[in-house]
Length: 480
Image (cartoon, rainbow, N blue to C red):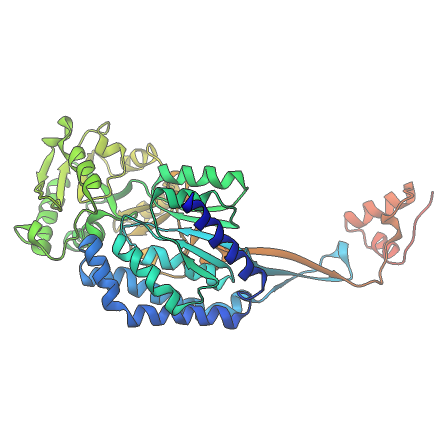
């Protein structure tokens, strides 16, 4: 009951703040964004320390993948805020002449952001940036699975932004459930599809729109004509260099040809040895598995009877880390090829011809990202046309989310809605249609009592007949 009371009180206070109009002016929005910029700059060490405590995340990853992206989002929003807020004029239309028309962006109201544990700073603050830019009041629920970062956010945000309009509620399942039971104007959730369905069921009770940033099995197709050393470095960076594979856009499996697989495998082994050494469990550049539940889940994927003998590199583990692990031709009906891995295991699936990868990818649920390494322009076009995914990158992995001009979001099982840049503003904005007419220019034919003459004029107007338009403008009613 306490969790419900806290959730209801927080929502009501935010509702009152929004109703006062406090969040609407551009000056307020810009001030909050500048506050977040200051927080990212002044508290860099504290943020990195929290990420280290939660995930043993290397400082380089903490800065490059979290702090710098928050900074980039804030700056982009500040630079474009006035343009985003301006009503957009559109043609008035012949049928409403004389009139003017515009599309006016307005904030949705009070929004809930439920963030994830794997990038607990970035995935908490990035949606909040969009919500603030759009003029909303925001309640942030950080992930309890990253407790150090959650506690830090609860401490820092009231010091850098307006706490009457931007609040943090910490807690676990009970607190999240209590928040979801409240009526919000939008819910933004980042996490897995199982919880995504729960979020959506709560939202449906109030007809609340949602953005669901989920995940999926992100494929990497590797053609034989690539610069192999560069390709394997980029795959490794996108897999193990992104929170040890605990990332929603991390490569989940590789598809290549049977003839090219030995070369690819050999190159990956060399790159991994160079990146993390002969004993990767001792590497300071490799994040740990977030908790025992996820650790045991990953171990179970590796230890499945039909999979354990497919490990061709790695497989070592201690009580907190699992080494980068490569598997060759794990059965497609194994758990590792059915579930999103979300960890340091990377199966390599072989096919006879590279085009066979399309059908394999499309036989699974739509991924959040799909990657193709190739120099073949025709193959790239076919991949783009035939593979459905939230996003797509050629000859690299994961870097599309750094481009503020691109939407980031899923499709199908990998999510709905998108954000980043202007798409973040749009995610928390209602586009209101506004038409402004003057009093002259009455068309009497539109009003009862209806006659055949009036109908003839109206038909002419609707068909674009110039004479009928003049008759309507002059107030003619035609013949009975």
